[in-house]
Image (tube, rainbow, N blue to C red; front, side):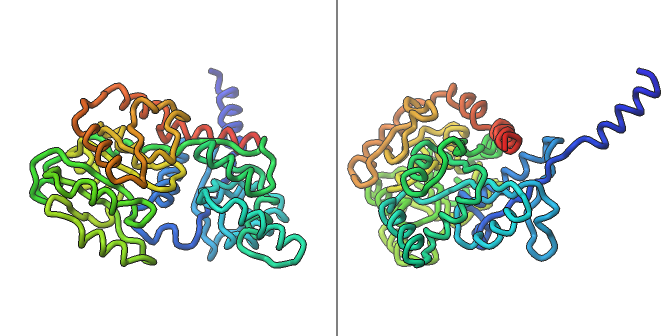
Length: 355
């Protein structure tokens, strides 16, 4: 390559367009050291760093200016973003929401939007509608979540994109002896990774498995608004059940527990995606998951046992079946290939560029 051509190439690289992305989420999203939204946001930011056409950072309201960014990506549809979204829109910025909404009360949401539009009663749902009116694209984790958005809010279906969460490979290859020494058990265990609350349904797992000698490890802290549920879980737990509390995603204890586990269970009443399902599969566990999710959407209907979260006997039956089944090693590579952070991040960039 000639010296002149090399100089021109270097100048072109310096002057190429780099999209500046601000990442936002609700005020308390990082207050727990674990949790689905926190994990999603932090891992997503890390995965974007490998793409040279993107420059991304967490938005700091104390020092950053919306005017300095091309696009604002919000994680979770919350009314607290209302004024900032209107400002960003007035500045000509593109706005993307990863909706992360509870899938319930569609009729109530529509009624509240009606009240806001015609009677000027501005509920959180009306504010959410106004936010979506100024949003360029919505990303949902499943078709079920997309359908719920369409049912509850007025929005253009062509601007809703379905992308699964990325899965962190650091859940693989843990040392099972760490968790076994910590809690003093030897057998393969069962693990339940999520916040301890009524929706995630730990109490049903406790009641389903209380007369077995299989170790069960609950990873996650209590819902601060319902400590009574957490206390009830601890009160009914038997000697084969252990509470690890909140665990950082990169804490060796998480990978250790998944390595020691034969089964990962998530019998939630309501669920939009369920990160722990995919992390369990990636770590080589058999998985029992709520039938509130359609695993067929991601081609995993033959790899996950679905249970009825309202039926303790069914939860027990499914867990014991999974515990006694052989592990299918082929699913590990399937999850790694289809749900890797790099793959999901690239699809986000494609959406950014399309708008």
